[in-house]
Length: 276
Image 1 (tube, rainbow, N blue to C red):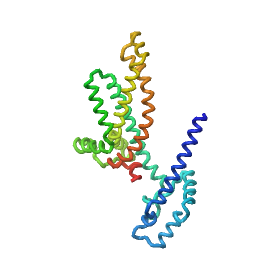
Image 2 (image 1 turned 120 degrees about the horizontal axis):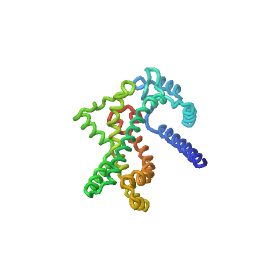
Image 3 (image 1 turned 60 degrees about the vertical axis):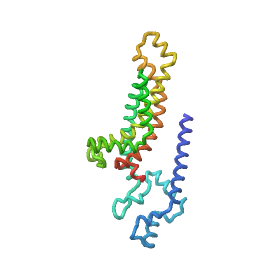
């Protein structure tokens, strides 16, 4: 219990420090949000009025405290870029609420593909007796790990979208319009993210299986007459999968971060589009 309490406290402090750094960095970035919002219609009087309306005339520490108070109540403020209408800027909470489900769905699809492909390839590769096939698997997975997801996305668009015409590049389908169309479109960017991660998972699992295969308990099981299939599924895989699950924890974070770039390639309106 103390361990989790310590980790939770550390997480809160870390998030607090990140929020301070992020908030103050955006205050020193060149540019004036008020002038950008008003554009060619900007006048000193209108700029001053809008600055007071948004609270930008207050000192930076005061603005940060007010922002923290709003966050505590679920209010992340108003966007300076997106507007609901001519007179009202869109709330950040609504923007995130609209975009986050898309990014999370894309990340979950990619994770599912990573697990399926990685485990399948890793198990088949570990049981491969041919040196030639072993080398082929090694070259393919090494190459897949080296290629960035956004470049794989471009190749997928060209092959599956333009040549095979399995989907229309850039024609994203909202889940409000069609659930089938929504998932049908996200499969392709998810596949682009899953390829390098599944290659990493396959290599990790293959090495773990081979390591377990050389331990004493495996030789004991063979001496008792257990079949190779039974030893693999009942003993080796159970032990080999433990470090792989730990490894997949880091993959989840990488998938979420990678989805931001892939969203740009496939024109998916997720969190990544908000950050650009």
